[in-house]
Image (cartoon, rainbow, N blue to C red; front, side, top):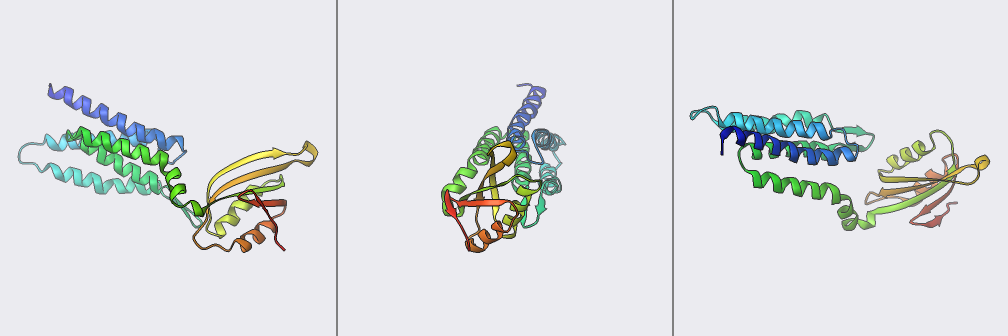
Amino acid sequence: MNDDLVIVIRLLLSAILGGAIGFEREAHNRPAGFRTHILVTIGSSLLMLVSMNMGPNADSSRIAAQVVSGIGFLGAGTILRTGNNIEGLTTAASIWVCSAIGLAIGSGFHLGGIVVTAIVLFFLRKISSLERLINRKNYKTITIIGSTRPGFIGEIGTNFGHHHITIINISIHAIGVKKDLNEEIIFTLKFPNKLDIEKLLKDLYKIEGIQEVLLNDEMIEVD
């Protein structure tokens, strides 16, 4: 096969594989998405191709090593800390993996790059289900019924943060008539291993507007 055609195929394959991972990240509104992952993957692939064509006396591993270490600066930019929660670690790892995929494709290790992409996509899409299956005792549903007002959900989320609870999903439903409009807010939560449920519920009932709290669809009241 013509050398120029090989280069084109490897770069296009890198773009496809990186784009697949980036599309998944963008679908979940992550800070680095489709374009970022494509650029990282094809850039790594190109650098690998360049290093392999620098001549017989050149050390092709040097550029590859710099890509692996240097990509950390880009990944660090996707990591955000909000209170006790750290977000973006998975996206930073996906960027790092994309650089490895690009290096693999650029060096001609096509099978490895394709298989890793498939594995990454599988775990990114199924990891929540697997985590819930493994740690199902730590996953709870709290349903809160309360009066609509600005900042209501924000106060509830802040309360969860104080108890080191991670919010996995939120579902909001309006109930009642317009003059007396309430909201039913269903939180899917990941509880820490040690949590004072009674203290959590007391803190929730202190929030203005909360009328009922249901834990796993069971009505909970506190004195």
